[in-house]
Image (cartoon, rainbow, N blue to C red; front, side, top):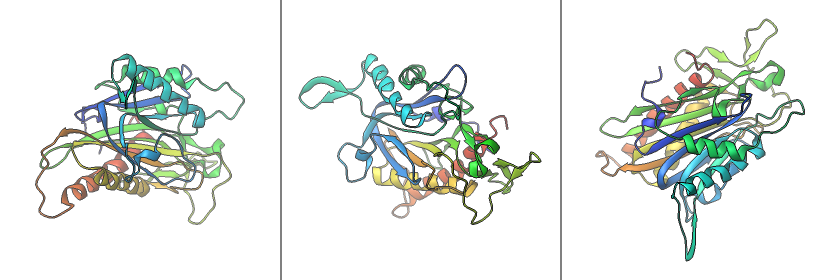
Length: 314
C-alpha cells in the first residue's frame, strides 16, 4: 500500500498541476528553491524532452530550478517557457555569466495524449505558467490531473481498447534519516500489474470488458508513441552519480509492473533530483550502502505508485 506521506512533503519540493478545461491534457511541475542537481534515465525509444543533454554525468551544468511533465507530445514542450516566465516573475533564477539577464535552467518531458480526431491542440505555455504558479506543498497527489489528465494504458491492441492511465505520487521516510518521493505518470502502451499479487489491474479491454493481458512475444499494434514519466526526489545531499543509480532503480521498479515496457514507441524516462536539504548523510558500513538502500525503496515505491496511477480512487 502507498504510504500516506505526500510527494510534496519532501523538504525543498513544491508540486503544481494545471489541466485543460476539458480535462484532456495538462502540465505538472516539480519546483525547487534554487537550482538543484538533476539527472535523467531515458529508456524508451520515442522520448520528447526539453534540455536534458546537460544532465549527463559528464556535462557541466547539471542543475535545474524545476522539472516539468506535460501532455501534448512535442507541443507540450512549450510549457517550458511558461514555467520559466513564472519563476523569473517571482525574482528567482541565476546570473548568466557576465550578462545582467537572469536565466532559469529547467528540464522536462512530454507524453503523447494528442486527440485522435482533428481537435485543437491546447496551448501549453499558459498551462506551464499556471502549474508553476500554483506549485506548493498541498497539491493533489494522484488522479487524472496535470500531465496525467489524458493518459491511457493498454494500447497494445490499439487505442480504442485502452483504459485510462493517470498520475500518482507518494513519499516515504528513509531509515536512519531523509525522505524520498516518487511521482509517476502512466501513459504506457503496456498493461499494469498489482505489485502485491501480480494481478492485471489495467490494460487493453477484451470484448467482454475484462482486461486482455499482453501475450509474451506478441508485437504491439502500430500506435502512436506513448510514455511513462517519473520524478524521484530526495532531500539527502547525494551526488549526481548516486542520483543516476536512483533513477535506474525507479526504472527497474516500473518495469516490474508495466508490461511491455521501454518499447520503441514508448518515451519512458525517469528524472532524479536532490533538494540538498539534508547535508549530514546517514553512516555507511560499506561504500554504496546508502544509495542501495534508497534505490531498493525507490523501486518498491515506484511499483506502488504506478499501480495507484491507474486506479486513483483505490
